Image 1: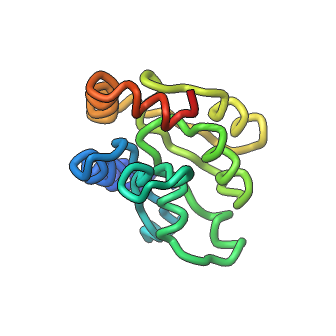
Image 2 (image 1 turned 135 degrees about the horizontal axis):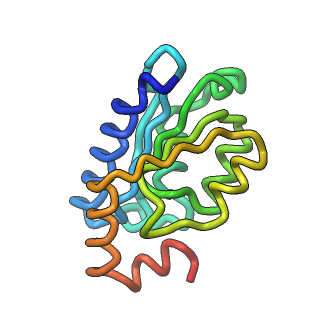
Length: 151
């Protein structure tokens, strides 16, 4: 599945940029199966839709539509930022075995460790573009960022 990491992160970052341009939180995601098929992608839509839960990973899963449980077992979820507790729970709920994270400097909760403890492979790629866009958002809109992470 590692062969699709570059594609997955590219799509996730493009989604983050789209979210930022829409006035939202620049966190994007992508779900790719083990054959390289993009099953869906999305970005944080909390501000655009007035939602309490549409984080980037949740938006990605929503945009995949209904899938058989077995499909998730052969996928990698790509996300531009380390997953929060809610998104970590969704990854575990659907049994997604692998999560590739763009960066965990601007935010790192307990999600990565919890995923690993539960058998999910976590790879952090330390992507400069992901760090830059997220830092810009946090610097420009700290109150919105704190709202997004529940602080």
